[in-house]
Image (cartoon, rainbow, N blue to C red):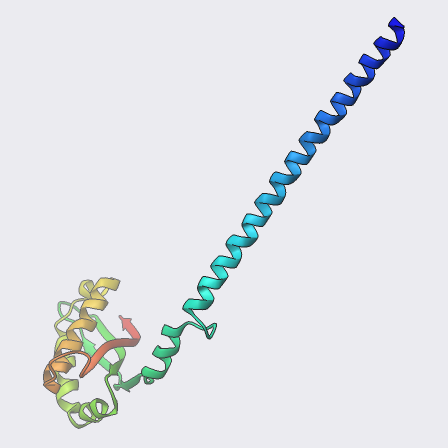
Length: 172
């Protein structure tokens, strides 16, 4: 009888280990299922929010900007070749002006001799050192913009020249 009791205790211990291991597997499985379910719910909520904010599936602001924004207008100026101040160097550059509309472009064409003269005087006043850095070129572009807008008698850049762009910029 003692032998049977010992076997029963051993069987209970083995069965207890099996039940304990089975409980761990069930608990881990439940936690894993819960984590996956939470991830799916979170993804669904985020998708629903994005759909509510953007019913067409497109960026509404970008769509508005496309309709409101007209294509840019540029006025390309002839090549400028000038002697730089303070030495034997010269500058050759091509300039394009980004303007508010075709009306401003027409005004520029009408006043081209004055505009070219003002730009030539401005370019001739610069030294090689003034124009050798990106900041120097940007400063020159800003000065040209102000000069042209002044000649066009516009109050803001949005009404006249909004940007000066260099197509070529060679110093020798």
